[in-house]
Structure formats: structure tokens, C-alpha cells
Length: 259
Image 1 (spheres, one colour):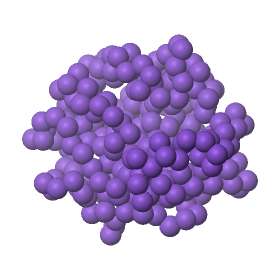
Image 2 (cartoon, one colour; image 1 turned 90 degrees about the horizontal axis):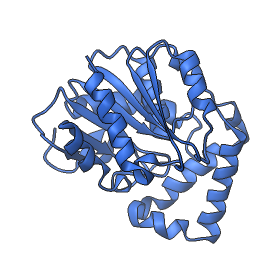
Image 3 (cartoon, one colour; image 1 turned 90 degrees about the vertical axis):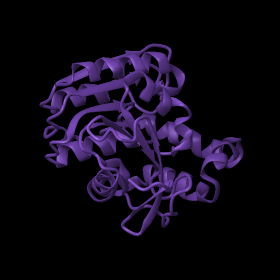
Image 4 (spheres, one colour; image 1 turned 60 degrees about the vertical axis):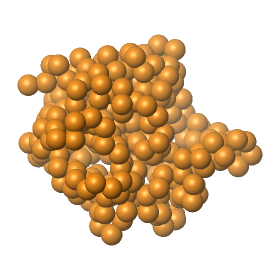
């Protein structure tokens, strides 16, 4: 792994951050951020996760986010597939991923699930999917429309700009316009769930405005591996920010049960 804070993947410069024992290669958690996330928007959760588990934790910002290379707009409607099949495999190799788990939030959870379903990766020991989505729900699209209004007319743009800087338009419009494209209503990745072979921990807040518990119902219906649910009351779309102690406890329990 390089000593600077940038990975070069397919001519893209991706910012990354490593927390914990940098010598650890077989106990690594790679975190995949949400549709509006980046390295800095994980806040101190990577440090808390490394401390709670004793594992190395790596976060990185996808292109168009944080301080990574910008992306072209509009993003293709296959942008999550592209990440799971083309970029993430190279990232895992580049950071020396010899064994561990993928932890994804929202879009990142979808990418992690697609990667696990499409790759027979013996290094991968488990998945943590926080607020995942596998198919389109009307309520989720309504929440994205509210985010669009808040970005244009409210304070969402300056709040996100602190993290994405010059990538602010790539980050927001690349995500928002893809999800609100009428053709995106056919987006459905449930076919990939049946090929996941690793234990899965699915974490979701009861009050998640972007997805219902039907997402977890479908995960259990399609996935042939074991699926453990962890449902958090009085919690919305970001359990790791809203209920970090409960989220950490659930992840620690999964790790203790891994072979």
C-alpha cells in the first residue's frame, strides 16, 4: 500500500485512509460510502471500528467524491455496477486485501453485495450492509427528490461542499440525476444476491427514509448464505452516525462469529 493518501486505479486518483495496524492484511475492513459520502463523511467511525475490532480499516472515496478524481456527468445508470465489477476489484488488490470484510452503506452496500455475488473471492469472509437497496421503492425516490430541493434551495449544498469541495456537483448531481432518471426505475440487483457465499449482517434503521425493511426481506429471500438482521429503532438512514454504539456492537458480534 502506498505511503501517501492517494490510490491510482484505472488512471483515477482516489483518496483513501487507513486506520489501525497497517501490517494487518488478513484482518481488514474495507468501507464503501453512500451515494453522497466520501472518506471524511465517515467521521470518526473508522477509528471506532478499528478500536472495537482490532482490525485494519480502509476507506476510500469513489471518483467524483471527496478529493478523488472528478467524474463525467451525467453518470451512467450502471455506475454502481461499474464500481463493483471494475473499480473495487482493483482497489482491493491495490490495498493488499488478503482477508476480511466489506462494509457498505446505502449505495456502498449495493456495490458490496454486487461484488460478493459476482466474484468468487476466497479473501472475502463476510459482508456488512448498512441501509442497503436492491430494488427501487417509490418512497426512496421521494426522499431523493426532497434532497434535490434541499440542495438547490436549502443548506445541503454548503454542508456537503465542505467534504466534496470541487467535486460537489459530481457528487450530488451524479447521484441524484441517476436515481431520478425514469429509466433507473428498472434498476434491480436482486439477481446478484443468490451468489453471495459469505455471512451477511444487514443493519437498518426503522425510520430509514430511503428504503423499507422490504429490502432486507428480499435479501433473505434471494441470498443462499446466512443473513443476520439488526434493526435499530428510532434511527434513520445512517445508523453508524445516529446509533454508532449499537452499530459497532452488531459488527463486532458478526466478526466474532466468522470462521
